[in-house]
Length: 246
Length: 246
DNA sequence: CGTTTAATTGAGGAAAGTCAAGTGAAGTGG
DNA sequence: CCACTTCACTTGACTTTCCTCAATTAAACG
Image 1 (cartoon, rainbow over the protein chains, first blue to last red):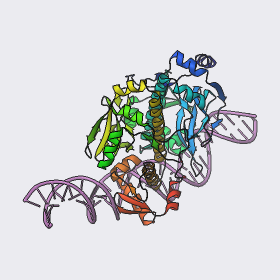
Image 2 (cartoon, helix red, strand yellow):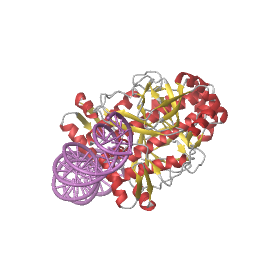
Image 3 (cartoon, rainbow over the protein chains, first blue to last red):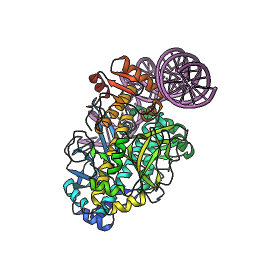
Image 4 (cartoon, chains in turn red, yellow, purple, cyan):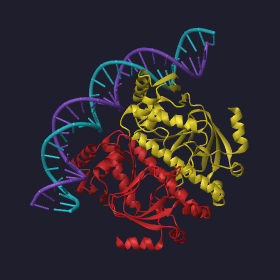
């Protein structure tokens, strides 16, 4: 972990995405060349946050964009009734802190200890203006994020609680695979309530869905954060789509 | 209508979005300069489609990107059980046809008569590589679309049918306002079933929601495609957020 | 080891989905 | 121009599902 951090630190930012044009079998890869990473690294400082530490709040003046080195972030909004809605979970290689009219559109909080590059928007903007290649990579990353968000919307359009949870597990599995990690076990870095807020359902419903999946022998959990898929066929059937696609 | 078409045709593509950095009071504006429009126009041909005509299918090789001149498009996917899920409605100034691994990620169909610029991806890519300003505008548009999609996800996370329908109407109203059209009346170019598929609920539920809103005196419909908001306070209250924000 | 926070489980009620029938609108052909 | 056919939409009755409230158990932290 410390090792990985130092490596990333030394070589500069990593932006992971799927190429919108070339075939890549669902794998994400690093978009930036060594040279680009170096040029970007000089703009950035490294920011660290503790678990559960707030990074920024919705509506605050957006002065920086972040790129995750290690750790997991949740992006969320507070509904007028005080409830939280999670819009995305962000992992190493992801970018967050995009703004609208100069203000952050969601809040962001670290849900694990976090290390991230911090880019002042002004510096980043002028760098972008001079570097068409880099701009192109930003476009690729944005298209990638757009797809992920569409996927989230697709998930939320699902009626059944089981479908949603299964799609969510698929999502995590794909992300893990995309980062090149082992996928025999799925790791859930977030709480049940966070899952519920991401899936648009109560945490009780999430809990019940896990129980149902376990009792049907579809998944098996080592502890509350680690589980294995023991019946892939039924799993994919509940998900209802051909897993790896998109 | 014919007039607008000719104007757009003469001057080239229009890409509407909110600026991610400057304040713009929720208004979208044209991102491209006259010069850029001219440079883009030479790459494009104009494609026309009839109402209900399919433009492309999910998974097809993505050879072109489109920019709407007039008309409305729905982007959708067919779920494995045969049901349709609408991911977005697209209006004049919007871009569609983004791909992943060289393939369209959704299908697209015209829901009104449609005129659109058609850009071959190869030509567009090489044009982009030479034009940093244009790339920047593409980035702005993508960020804008990302927000819209997040908004859609946020909408889908809502529990109540009324909330969803009201948020949907807000969305249409904002889009109309952003395009500079009159907003005394909201125009719904799509069918009830399309609305249902966008909102993740049955068309019956949509119908019932409209009835409830009408009977409570919150909206008043001239016909099935035109309605007015007669009680803005209650309307915004049901939507639950401060309307114009984001 | 005790306290706090996270997660599970159960019972009851509200809400939307499904099925099915009926009404209204639009487009077609005589 | 009108009758007929078709498609879009509305409305009702019934069923399923998940949310809410509340009580318990399990895990994490000092």
